Image 1 (cartoon, rainbow, N blue to C red):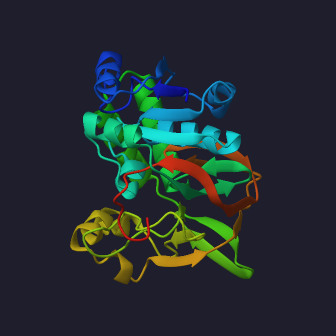
Image 2 (cartoon, helix red, strand yellow):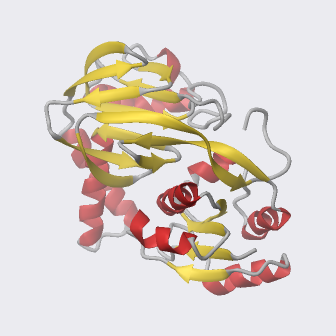
Length: 295
């Protein structure tokens, strides 16, 4: 079985190539370690799929998403060595964050089929959003291009997005039901995200064939400032200005013909309308044998 580890050195906690090679050796695994650019697109990974049986992403959620999409398109097995700052996919699927533990999961080789989300034929594994969050991603990227360190770039991006927070009007079709909303953001997740309890912001499953939809029709700057407090206090689900629902299919149309959207933290531009769906059992993923219920 031929394996490729696609390493993004610029991810938040990126391991050095030698450390990954040593960990693979300790686990008795052979793999080619290939360095990939931080802003790689699917086109740079797809050609590799024909040469390998297993594609392993070593990076943050952007790298994980790109490699996962290539694996899903090619019908290849997917694995993860978490190297990012947040590691949403790894945390939600129970993949250990420590290097040797993550490699041990790869060595065990237990797989499970997971769902992927899709918007206008582009695959995502965590979430997609339009509105304020893509604006923040753009501001952060611009600050990073000017040489600002990542924490300062993020702080500046959040401040500028908040100061210029504006709402958009969107027409939605949610499982055939038509809605019109004016909101500063629309968030679509692959499976349902927890809004209460100790697991807030995480998913209990990625196999239920649903999308989660979150909007804030009466959301303003004050609400944006208080949003982290609602998360800390675990009262987000009861927040009167916050709207949440689940669906199998969602279409979002806006007055603008071209819409910026952030998919798993990476910025993309789409032609409106945006059509979201779920591809059931489309990503064969190496996961720990002992899994949380429903994962």
